[in-house]
Image (cartoon, rainbow, N blue to C red; front, side, top):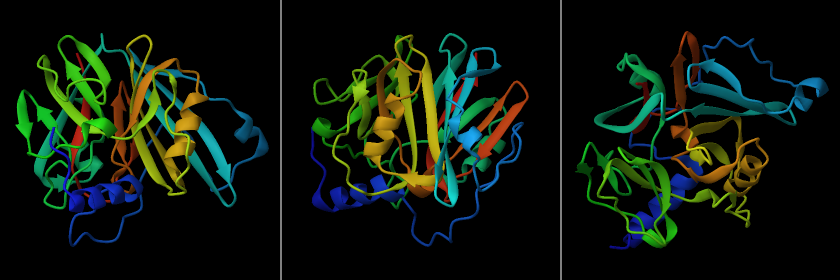
Length: 277
């Protein structure tokens, strides 16, 4: 395993707080939302804040949950989608022409859900290992001792700890490196709080093998706080790992008539797509 050169380490540290912004990017646009839910206000009542996180079915094999986090003058939201792998397929997608998450969804008529993918460089190539449909994309890889591997394959989906396993699964057609772990072996994986806050996105797997995608939007949170927050949800986690957050954070859902959009602030070159079987 080749270690990342020092300049790349500097870049990826920036990614953890802000997401990758390609050169010449314009100012972030305001994220839009199209949902069956009632419009959200900028303030939260005590009763609303007390509503616990619960899963609600929004389609065959698909659920949605949300936790409201009041914080001073604004209200943040942890939004999560859970998919049954018996009903849905998962894969990465990459382009040389980056675009907003909303544009990714508009161009994929068969997608039920799309979320921003993994870290990338200013030339749009992946910052870590990325393999799509049995083809390697890019030539870089992260230090295996500090990363995890998101695997979508015919023999199952999993998030593998590369500090104890090889950084490649020969049976996986789609896999990508990311970091850091938020939940590892069912427990919060980050104890020390760096104080760096940003919008966040993540992928996790529960004990039943269901895939959970989520985003912290409407506010900013540190990786340590997100790790602890995920541990409070009604989920029996196996592992969960951070995706490319910050300005890259975004997702779009179109599931059995249920639509929701939390757009990325910048164009992104890779995403995770979920499609009904």
